[in-house]
Image (cartoon, rainbow, N blue to C red; front, side, top):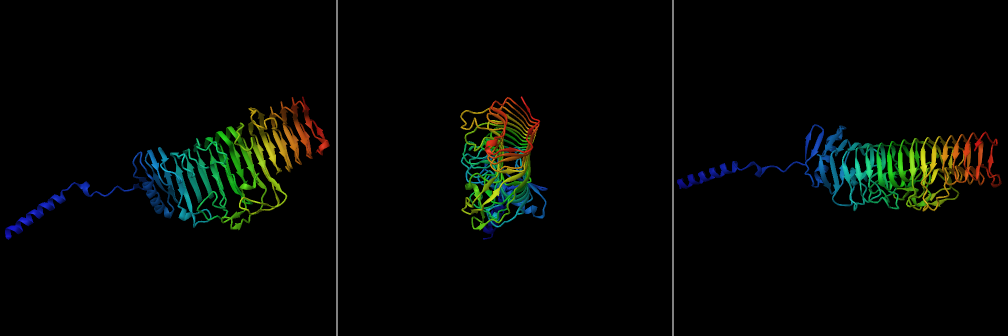
Length: 516
């Protein structure tokens, strides 16, 4: 019996020794989702694989660590990867993808989004997400993915920098709503898979927070975007560059700067602004664009005018504003005819006088009112136009000065190719000054006032080589102060034609002009 006990003890000891000396890998813990050094978190990733889970784990930890206000960085190691779900970024976080190529593996999600749908449904105002930077990376969306690549909402102090974004079949590469303080710099947006879509597909969209027709999972309180800077980016081979294509009646997007950007091969407009106040559009270069810059205080169709918030449950109580206090200057614009573009124009100011109440897109009431645009300076732009150079409709008290407009590249397949003017002022546009512009080679008239329009002054312009008239007033138009010191040559149907029989007048007569 004693021998058996000794034998059992000996065997037990051997087993224990064997167990102790097993290789360490047998009981090694699973790899962590990230490593951390200081305030930098590095997700554990493998090249060529799906990194969604570990990057999101690191982003969520950065949110927790940044709760006291210190920004933490999630740095993805260099390499090519896939994601199969949204990367969710929260307050006080920097996502750095410099040196990475990131592709979508599935469809139906944003590549990057602020917060979560659950959080968005609880938030109002602009402070749910703050102090966010998304930096670097080549982000390639899928042709099958119908979700915007980057979605920003309910945030403040958000920066996008050095991002290369391409492809995708939704309308927008970056869309934002209810944000205050967004800066997008040195990014590339190119090669959209819906370049030839008839829809309004801005690469960067400033959206309205009114209903779920465009932006889901929000509290729809009408919070507009404000304090947005889009500086030094490139846009190429896409449908539309920057802007907004819907409006919430009497709701205004404030303090937008669009400066130093390059646009090339844009089938519709490079920049489309709707109800922008205190904004600057300056020093941009546009090549082969269907339209250059639209600056609208109304829409041509009620189908894109909303009047209610809270998903149509409450009328929006905004105050009508007309003074844009904005500038469009030092831009170089070359337009070409594209059949998908609504209007072939270099720069357009558009307002609309509604004489009786109408219904908007949400069946709410658009009251009768004059939704005109005023207070815009269009200065020192160079426009090579295959259509209108500068077009004004129900635009009052604006300054158009020192612009160069050259008619060129007219397309005979364009049904309007023989009807374009250098500067066209029409339908309720009054009080504008048109001075010191240089206009040449226009298929129709250099400067046209049409249909109850007026200018305060038309002075110091140089107009040459237009197919019909140099300056023409037609259908109850007037110049209220002076039409003088213009130099006009080679306009075969008339240098200055005032159309007195159609009710047109020029105060103080026509004097001191040079006609050659």
